[in-house]
Image (tube, rainbow, N blue to C red; front, side, top):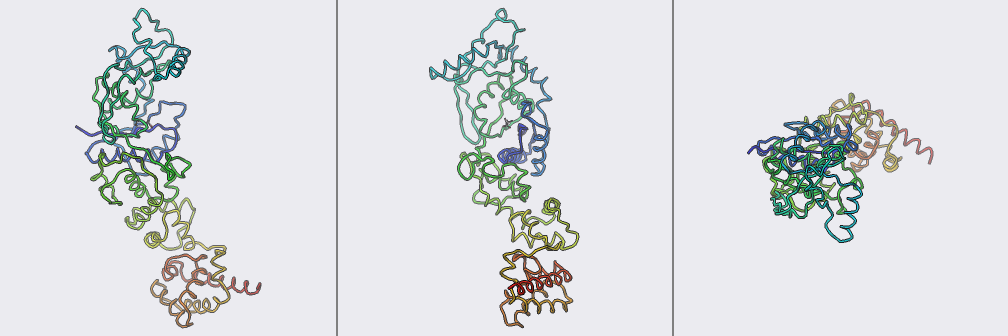
Length: 472
Ligand code: GLU
């Protein structure tokens, strides 16, 4: 059997991280079995589907690098096919026209509620003969669900699920205007596209018995099903906007690497021993549906941060570069005059959790700042810092070998010569040249800032101290 999986989002918003995880699991499963992964856009709800949401799905999938082997298929382009299959069910006696008015159905529901019966259609039109029908009258088409027996399927995550047909009413498969309904289009598509494994969110698990009945009525093979439990926020409720970022692209904007997001998502509900870090190849090799948790998983931002830092530090710099570049563009930071970004990544990755933070914390390497960070200046640009700064400035002025090691040495030699702690020179110098109290090792910092800039900035800091002295 060729494994074929699909991701079938409805384009009614952004690509949710829950959807992305489902997509990843489907994608991994297909790759693992040398199968095919299909992308299908379920856009039949014309009021809620938008072009922008379709684009958001493509953007999210392509940012995550989850390419599809077939598609994208659009359900709105397949109406003819759905009509054909509806007719097939009508002809085989597996579907029927229902003329019940809204009033009748409302009344039926009320009665069922009062009598505490299962809510559902009562099959009123199920046995109408040809003569009893006037098909020019408004009607819907219902699937004739079997009335006896039980639908049993072995969910590859949840285990065996059995639902008695007596609990399933006759579902509408075509509306009065002839358009097909959601459960029916899924069934036609899954069988036409020869999907072998339907991997989807468990909000769809209740649809599955009905879908199985319809697939059988169409004479098609029933696929395997795997329903992935939902993702919870840190308060135990279903992950939603209230909890923070839920769209995949928000994670890009926040400065996460797709590699980190994928690794995070694969572990959110799936495990392999106590391993936390998985390359894509390892995920493909090790992922299995039977190891997906049955219980919902809780989102944990700290773990995502940890993974992101891990990938910033450990991925080949070339893989991080395009993502970093994107953030640099967003921040409109001109990096033409300063250290090479490739050098910057390994040094800065130790100090920040995201690419966005990284970009925000390196601007002093490329451009001058207007003001010193108030808190850092208050603490370190004080009159006592004047002498150390002047001394280090004259040593730097005379310094020709402008490399990290020798600059580092120069700073410690200054502290020794003045017989003061390294911090008493280093911190004022750091604030002077970077504007804040945080930067990598001073040797590297000075090397990257460059001699001219460093000296100018020290002058600025000395002026700041002088002004402060005058005000005191
Ligand atoms: N279109 C459905 C959704 O976005 C998914 C349907 C399915 O996977 O069967 O929730």
